[in-house]
Structures are given as C-alpha cells and as structure tokens.
Image (cartoon, rainbow, N blue to C red):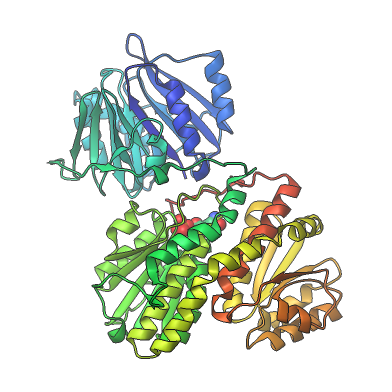
Length: 609
Ligand code: M6R
C-alpha cells in the first residue's frame, strides 16, 4: 500500500525523501511525490506517475532545496494513478500525504465545497488537506487544525502534514495504518515503517492506534486520540530489520525463496528443542489447548493458504475442530464464536486491514486471540493476546514465499503442542514429528536443487493461457498457493483445485493446451491422485508432476515434466513442496519479463479493505 515519509532536517531533504521512498517500494505503488518548504516558506511539490525514477527525473530538472518535507508512494484506490491524483495534496496553507481510505470523504467534500474550499483532484485524500486548510483559515494553529480534522475523519489511515507557516514542523497521525517516529541527531523523521527510516536512524517510536504527533528538530510530542500528551516507548530496531539488500539475486523474490532453509532453521530454533525432541512454546499461554472447543483461523491470500494447511495438522494431531475463513468474509458475516475458542490470525505484515478487523471482532467478543506474524512491531502483533512470530526476516517481494513456509512451520509446531496437550499425541509421536521438522532446512536445500529443471519448464508454462494446479489433503492448499503465486507475478490465469473435485467441473477445461501441475507426495492419498492424473492424461492435458522419489517411481502417467522432491514424512511435505511451486511461478514471470518484485496492481501490505 502507500508509503509515507516526513523529515524535519538540517540539510536539503528531497533526496533523502526519495531514498526513503525507495525502501517502501516493496509495498506497491503507481505514482509518487514529495513536497518541501523552499526558502521563504514556499510550499513546493514534485509529483510523477509510475516508478520513482520518474520522480527522480523530475527532481533532477527542477530540484528542491527545502530542509523540511514529506514524501509518498501512492497505490491508487480513489482516482486513477495520474500526476494530479498523486500525493502530496496541497493548498496554500498545508500539504498532506495519506495512506488508507477516508470513508466519509464524499460527505466532507460536499461540506467543504459549500464552505468555499476548491478541490483539484479526484482522491479521497485531498479532503484531508482541504479540511485542515479550512481550520487553518479559521485561525487554528497547525497542530490544533490537524487535531480538529482528525475528529471528523472516518476510515483507516496514516497521514503526514507540512505547513508553510512553520518550517520546523511535520505532523503525523495514525488510525488503522502504521506510522513510526524516527529520532535523529537534531533531525526528526516520520515513516510508514522502520525500513523507511533505516538510512537515518535505528531509534524508533511506533505510534499507537489513534495517536498523532508533532515532530520538530528538537524532538516529538505525541498525543493520543483524546489529544492528551502521551509517552510511547522508544525502541532500538535491530540491524536485521533493515536487511533489504538483494545480494547477488536478480529479484528479492529469488533471494527470499533461497533464504528458506536458513529462515526455517531460525524459526524452528525458536519453537523446537531438537536435543529433547520437544516443542518449545512460552511457559504460560493465555489459553489452555486442552480446554479449547474450536480453533478459528483467519487470514488473507497466501497467509490464508498457510492457515488452510494448518487446519489439516490441527485436526490430525490434536483432533481440534478448525473453522477457517478469509478475513474479508469473516469480519462481515458476524460468525457465532465458540465459548472456549481460540482465534488465530496469520499475517506476514501484521497490518492487513481485514485481518486486523477480524482480530478486533474476536477480541470484542471475548475470544482468546493469537497471531502468527512476521513483523513483530505490527499492529496485529501488538493487539493479539499472544504472538507466535515467524522469523522470516523482512520480506520485500510482493509475492510471499519465505513468510509462507515460516507460517507453516510455526503452525505445525502449534498443532503438535495442541495434540500433546489434548492427549492426542504421545511423547513418542511428538519426538517423531519434531525430528521430521528438524530435517526441514536440509530438505528445503535439496528442493532448491530442482531449480534448473524448473527454469527450463517455466519456458513452456509461459506459453500457456491457463494453468490448473491439483492437490489432495494438505497438498490442496499448496495447489491453491501455487496458482496464486503464478497468477500474481506472471499474470497467467491459474486455478487450484482439490484433485477430487476435478470430475465435478474443472475437467471440462482440460485439453492439449492446458498444463496441469499436480502436487502429489507419496502419502495415503497418492493412488487417488494418480487416478486423477490419468483422467487428465486421457484428455490430452499436459501434466507437471511434483512428487517424491517413491512417487516418481510409481507414477504410471506420461508427464510433460516430473519434478522430484526428496522422500520425507508426509506431515512436513507442504513446507517442502511450496518451494517448487514458488520457483515455477518465479521463473515463468522472469521469462515473461514481468515486474516480479512489484507486480502490477498489487501491494505488499493491504491496509485498506
Ligand atoms: O501481510 P499479510 O500476510 O496479511 O498479507 C496477506 C495477503 O495480502 C498476501 O499473502 C498476498 O496474498 C500476497 N501477495 C501473496 O503472495
């Protein structure tokens, strides 16, 4: 989603604003802009459609030299991604940048137009600039004008404001979208996340829900939603949070795929005691696995597919009934919740608007809440009763890869812990499962060796108009994830189905032009999946079989290609089989020349509904 940066500095800030925006590119955007206060307090903007290089070109021709400024990458929601809709939006008295959606902008716009304000864009965001301008015109100070405007806004947002009347001030506000304050030496910063502030400082204060802040060169004054001055903790962010280097890889996605053996190792080290072959969770949990009647898992996109995989584990290992839903449906269907229930929210960013709203719904209804989150400082991490972090490190590619497999591993550990606590798994079974998990880093490294073969295969997949993915049991969510990965970065239409569903409709699509990727580890449903492959082969479909050595030896079906994974216990197969489907999507997209790390129309963190 949109990215925000603000700097009250001691040297010209335009270059720093753009550098910082580059670190927010991963969030997805389609236009960008900066505004600074030029000598004499003249508010000046530079904005451009498309990538940041266009904004840089504009700044090279028409440089800005102001010492205080705000910047923005915009992911269009209301109004096309044009220069006039790009942020900052400005009047003579204020410039603003905005992430999120102002839900009541139409009503406010009508009211402000009636009061004489003149609008120049189609965006919901401009209403904020006009509203603050209106209050400034009535004689309020910049801070009070912002405070008054915030009380009128409905929706989820983060905002930064710049005022020509004060060259030692940027004001920020957050409600629903993250915003952080960076503490420098005689300089102060605002940013959507710590990554944006990494070039300047590692000393960060995360604003809480409803907070607004005035930053000046000498420091920051933070107010809560009642306008009371509040103290928020200052955190020194670890260097690892700033690791955003592509290394020798062509794309972040490639780097992140290859990091999986390592980050899965880190994540496992947190959740298992390999020597004792035991799961290791915090000593005190806010809920008792043994007393739970139901587990409700809520997430979006790839995180939802991780949750769907975990459903199989929780049901198999712990005999715990699992309800799972995508957050955008869950939050509005107002589901009845079990009295002794736990709701588990899965999110890489920890900022996904629908997942966060679902968490708040469950909390409001007295359910225990837990989150599997990759960004430990995120809103979901802070609002859940307990957080089970994934230690994937920063994930920059919009297509989620290493966060997905880390989510799987964390939830596998939780399911084993639940099984043990509920008396459904013996100590010996726990040992066996933990030993299997311990093999994952090595298995993932071996899975990556299939890359040259997958790269060659990708050239054929790139010619397809549609691709079908099939899987049974816990391979079904991996089929769904494979289809999502392919469509989001290569733009090839792809769908995942439970293999047993093939006959109930999708088989009508099969002809000799249709690649069918079958995810079939040699597990108890392998034979059934082979029958489904035969049905595909009989209709001329071109099968790409992803299986293990044993499965490859027994597959009696002609394939376009067979990708062989190592043999492994079936329980951990979803983690390993995620790797070939990620590589297939990646190489297909590279071959097609798409923008792999920032695919069109997509944002890394979906902070609007
Ligand atoms: O940050 P989250 O895990 O909550 O994000 C959820 C989805 O937006 C995300 O997984 C999305 O589907 C990815 N682009 C998938 O690669």
